[in-house]
Image (cartoon, rainbow, N blue to C red; front, side, top):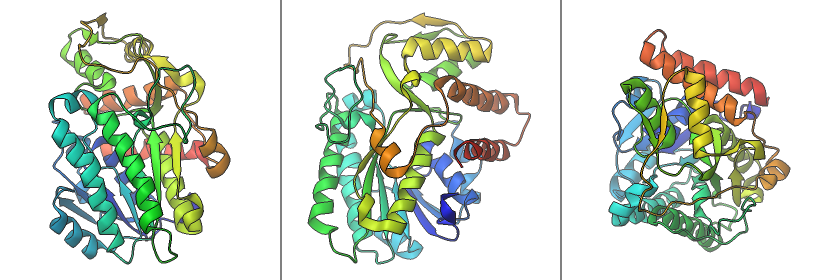
Length: 354
């Protein structure tokens, strides 16, 4: 896969203890990469990172803050990465209302720190900068946002990621035009689901908690529309983008959307209902609408990733939910080695895209 570009490559992942970071670390290890992770401690209990002992499966795992420039520079200098996948972030919309300063410090200043540290590290050739579909100025229109649509954001999380996109574009034009500099692209994904996510205020983890505690699953905004995709979908896009940056450099140094096909753009209520049907238990109820603003309609246009990168999604929303339920069911039944099962899910997905 990926023309074996990652075999024996040194890969630096920020945010490797998180949900997406854990899946990416495992996949890169399967591809033969030497993974160095830099992140805060996992912020959920349980966490995929700890439950699957990912620190023992990768080359190096460092607990650190991207706001700690001295430790970040020391770690990157020692790891000498060929490519960086920057996933570290404060990723929750609702938390950004109570922690706006932390959100901006981590997402904007933290990203700038990683960009600058990479510029001081001669080994770095490519940089995949992960943002979000929420970086766009959302006008609740019935079409998918394209990469050249205006950046924006109503809440502090979304606007911080819009700032990251603008800053990344400026940084690229200011510092990364010369031949001896690394190639940096931004990646914008939709609502990501999959096994191993226990974050608060996310639909799937909330559903799983409700099912396993035997309590009603309350949903705040049942008619909100989102682009749902299994975690391996955007990760396959990041890996493909990384391959292109490593082999063709600046040609692919741009922004790319990685989202599902239109049939997987569903309401919150539809997703919760499908999940309980697949699981075979769980009761969904409509809770009180949150006083905090949340987007009602958000979709991505993925034509650029299809045409320029040759990427496309492999799973429908229903298939993504089936894979997600399968993961959690095994985890709570304790009937299988979860690291091996996660690797198997990656292999199954890889078989769909090669």
